Length: 338
Image (cartoon, rainbow, N blue to C red; front, side, top):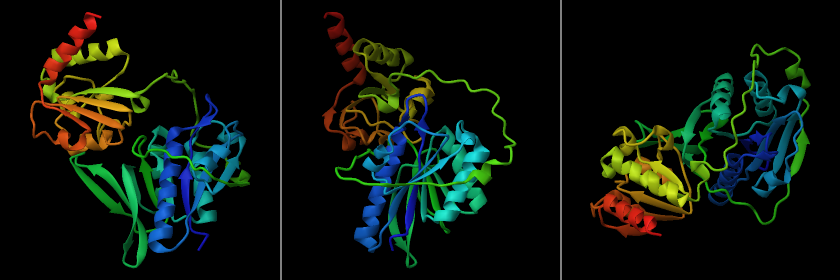
């Protein structure tokens, strides 16, 4: 059945004229679900990207490159800037017209507002802030099994939606985006002018643009992460100084944040950021499950811990049984003599 669809709600960065990385990650995930549907359950899923804007400069072929079979484009001047009323109404109408079985939303600032607004009006379920998903057979129906952290990231819950469309939001960095070698797509402009005739009760008073940072923790290539094994704020500041000298990114485990060693903004894990650097070095991180899920996509992981039974050693490429603070001190000493 070629008309069974999976929607990916895209995000477009106007100031950079590109789609967000999270858009490409969601398309990669949708392609994987399409593969599972074909190989495990003998039916086809069409990957459909939804684009809402007043007219964009980004290349739609990029959506095809990451797996979009179809692009549904809603173009209207009222969509120039984000407005919950107009955006949610447009997505709701698209869902009613095209009847997708699954809808994947980005767990971004906009997506976290948009998804519950749409699903509540559809009276369907929403699994929020997911880290993974699969298709499974449940009572003779193929369902989306979406997994998310719960109880502060200590446990993982896999949730099924009772009704279609089955909806979920996914945080950035949990899926490694993967482009296709051969791809084609179809683009259909959907006329929904009638949705924008009534003024929105939401008024945008002012837009204050964030400064575009050259690098964030989510896209850092090398990360040094400090855990509660560093014990004191002074020791954590040594690690901070080391990262500044090397020009790399600093992160912290939840244990370190809870002890007051570091700020929550740099926390990695289920209740923090999800990262996928080329190199991740964990200094005194025990490796609880909620931390591992936030950095498991790292290409190479080096773990330093004096506890040879620390769980982090089951999730690393290189294991160093040593006092992390002593390693930091030695590295600072070596660098200061250069």
